Image 1 (cartoon, rainbow, N blue to C red):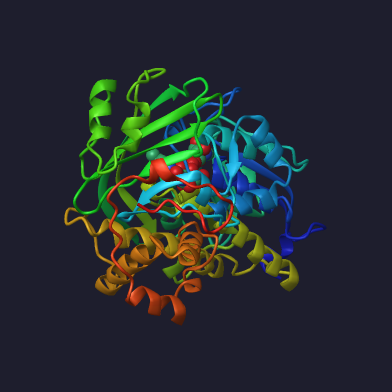
Image 2: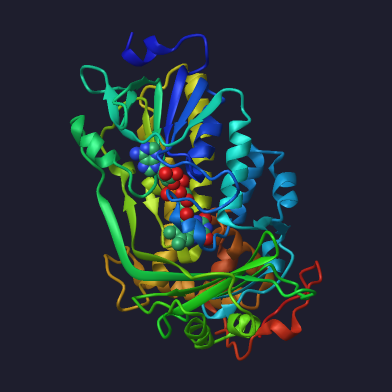
Amino acid sequence: MSDIQSKKTQSRLGKHAVVIGGSIAGLLTARVLSDYFDTVTIFDSDTPPEQVGPRKGVPQGNHIHTLMPGGTSVIRKYFPKIHDDLIAAGAEYGDPMLDWRVYFGGRWTPRVASGLESYMMSRPLLEAMVRKHTLALANVELRVATPVAGLVSNESKTVVTGVTLRKTGETIDADFVADVSGRGSQSSTWLEQLGFAAPASVMVGVDVGYVTFLVEEPAGYQRDWSMIYTTQDIPNSTRGGGIFCIEEGRWMVTAQGYHKDHAPTDWPDFLAYLKDHRFPDIYETVKDLQPLGEAKKYGYATYLRRRYETLPKFPEQYVVLGDAICSLNPIYGQGMTVASKEAEYLDVCLRKCVENDSIEGFALPFFKGAAKFVDAAWDAITVEDFRYPQTRGKRPMGYRLAKWLNGKFMDLSGYDKPFAIAFFKVISLAEPPKSILTFKYLLKAAVAKKTVCKQSPAANILVTGDSKGGGEA
Ligand SMILES: Cc1cc2nc3c(=O)[nH]c(=O)nc-3n(C[C@H](O)[C@H](O)[C@H](O)COP(=O)(O)OP(=O)(O)OC[C@H]3O[C@@H](n4cnc5c(N)ncnc54)[C@H](O)[C@@H]3O)c2cc1C
């Protein structure tokens, strides 16, 4: 009997699972593991605030965070009661294709009923609610201010048997350990310490900078949107930004610049930066308002992907998820959704282990499956970002064809509403890329007309609830 099998006791896969990192991906991972292990302990180096608000361990929480429909459905599946809490706390809920005014890829996304769902809220609110519902599970606990220092293994260093805590040096035994500690994950070092190879890293340099202010929504303001997002006209412009309606009647106003063209942090200059957008809708909406405080900044130089799926071998009882696998360019708003899909896939893989009555050899098939979600996001965004000549890194194989096809898909989705919905489903990870790689859509895309946007559709938005409405310019 192997080390792994001998640990299986009365529960389905083991007694105790440890999760390193209690952010969105870590909490979802703990939720999934709670179905397979008697107890789950999450260790986080940080201490979440009592009230909903940003925290040190997740500094990106000061900035806009879109939860894409692919992630929304996973979160609602694992926390069926979270919806009511989010709404009660002030999140806005709706169909993103109707409620989000998005200029992306050189065209305004048509505003049509898609049947998809999402929320608009601050990142700290989402995390607080996911944390509340995870910790409501009787077998999950969170130990705050408790950084994990490393892994513990069996004598032959083939099976991870626990973790050590940085502050006390204490060893915590575990039948399964998940590293969900974000981009700064130490797994590469830990693997090497056990005699395993570290995963190869792929980086793409974009030098993105976020500057964010909060403003109060003017009293009585009439709007039919929960988000305005105008992304860069790549490669001609490096400037984009958004307004997100968040709880407590506030707007989160962000300017995002590529390749070091970052917005200033004083309000008048920030406004001038926003005005210098091809469609200055954000500027027009906030120009007469005053910020609620100082600007928050965040610099994001490179995306980083660690290719766990290509490793030849991996320790037993150990896995890595979330930004620790791949930290994506945040402009496209996919990180939490990719992490959610990975957590859902973890569930699929663990269920198979129960059926097979063994968790031996768990990790590599998991990484291969999880890579499909990362690929879906990575391929969709690198194809755009490499259109800037300044973007650093290795272009994906078949880049020219992918760029041509993506451009055609963008054009088609500017006026073909059924395709726009299908395309958005792929971008938002609600459907896999193959769902649009059909003969019908490829043929339509090949002859797609160039979308020419002359004006913002703000003035003539139709929110009809059917696919006849739209906001093409
Ligand atoms: C500016 C910005 C904007 C973004 N916008 C979006 C968006 O619009 N939509 C979207 O989906 N995603 C967005 N993202 C990405 C998103 O924030 C992440 O994908 C998401 O937080 C999931 O990450 P995670 O849980 O894997 O890691 P993180 O959120 O980084 O959390 C890691 C956790 O691990 C803890 N930790 C670290 N080391 C240790 C240790 N040794 N021991 C114990 N605990 C540890 C940390 O305290 C933290 O709680 C954005 C990111 C940035 C930077």
